[in-house]
Length: 278
Image (tube, rainbow, N blue to C red; front, side):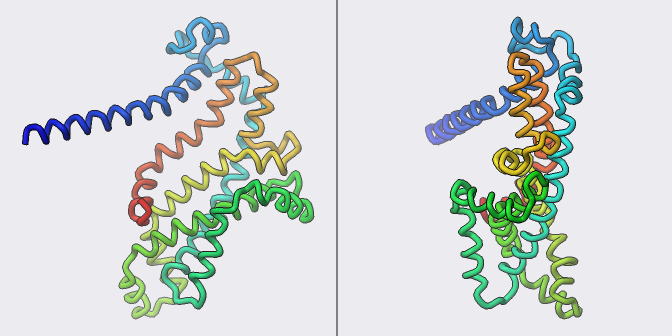
């Protein structure tokens, strides 16, 4: 018995040690970049891994205004919010339909939809560009919004379908007895119950579109329309020797993602677990 307990303790120790290594690999670079954003340029060379002796905001202010990160930031906001709303609306309705409605051929349609998960983006990039060009949407934010929404819908529908399938059908039967229509059941009964999955989907969708680089590079050629990942590339090229400014630009780009994840983390875990895909 003592040997068994000792083996369990050793196993847990090794497990937590491995987790600690991964945490350090993930967190340390973020802390290093963020702390560098508050250092003077010379301090980065003299004390690259230490805490700033004096926190300054000059780098962030310079990157925000003169480096035009403010323009890139708001462009990312203008692209991200409509994309999240479109993905959330389509995936919620489609996930509910595939999970709870008795529709002829819905399994075949769902399988066809899931083919979007296995098709590599590089395989459709030429045809996608031709489609966007024919719609006269080049240098238009809606080119990125519609393309990213379509790209996210298969996984998002799969997530919402998994969650709705985990909900008992008795809720729907009771609502039908009370005279609710199918849409009323979805809006007043099923959608509030799906709050963990919805917030998980909001976080995933926001992270995908916020970090998107390739679609913005393809469709947004004007500087005034660049999103943060695309603008950061040109920002680095412009200030390649000023590491403090580069760190400030990376901080501005990464901070919203960290903030959204911190606030929605518990909903994300609950949504993934209750959706049956843990």
